Length: 181
Image 1 (cartoon, rainbow, N blue to C red):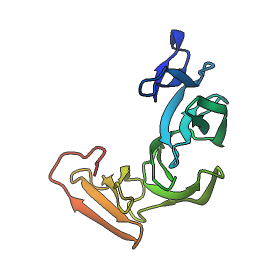
Image 2: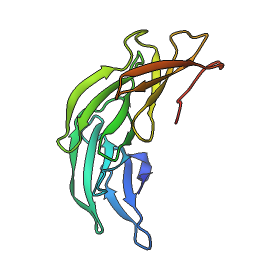
Image 3: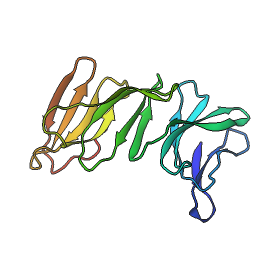
């Protein structure tokens, strides 16, 4: 699956090219910007972002061997300033919300029902506005992110939601950008 701009850069479409098959359009542009987020855990629905209603939202379209099945369904109507970070094996969508002040939040989403189960909550309760660029470990047990509450001494923060553990590791560097596991 890949996205491509359509003619005259008036949006982007999402296409599929199966092994040994013929390319097909899964999500047509209609002047909208469409961006791939990932597959649902059962790989029957493609999750993508689109501004087809005028503002960015999160959408899903059912996909079979024949291609897209039916019209895309809107899961989240307002996903302005979201940066998708990935979908877990259980269907949780993790994202980063861009704002003037940066912090790291977690929330529980029900993608099937298209609703938020728990509201976003800040991970750290001190030095508000000084954490950025979170990244979940592959197993979903830890979250790493940058800490810049002391600009002269950047640090990595690690959060483990199962036990609530939070710690910062001082790094001998001028800055830290988008730590990855």
